[in-house]
Length: 173
Image (cartoon, rainbow, N blue to C red; front, side):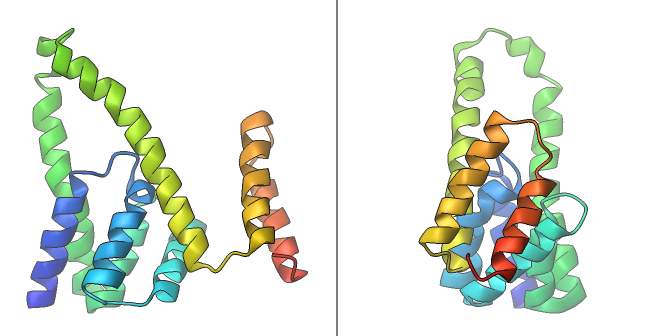
């Protein structure tokens, strides 16, 4: 039971900094799950993230998988609830009054600060997953090429996934 309470407490706190979604939380998730509680190793963490990204559905699926790995079905339910419920309640309550503060200095600061924060957190998460997956120079080069390709073209990202799979099968990355 204490593991479920720890899961709920840790993930409920993380829900308050989930700007950019679960992907932006990866560094903190990693720190909590792998470094602090040692609920799993880095490789298992990277595998769960890969499964969550390959499956259809929201990015928060990684939290459900982590909960499942730590404490089975109850862990999956507790982790998902802890990640989704607290901030959902806060956002619901905040946005019912958001327009009332239109133009307030603090409101503009929040709006300007959240976007770069989310980008930075997502970049940190991508770096962490790449390190956990043991990417070499070829892998990091491929990541940079994919980022440039996706920002400069309108091709579907599935082409990049297919290219990555082909390079992985060939042993290049």
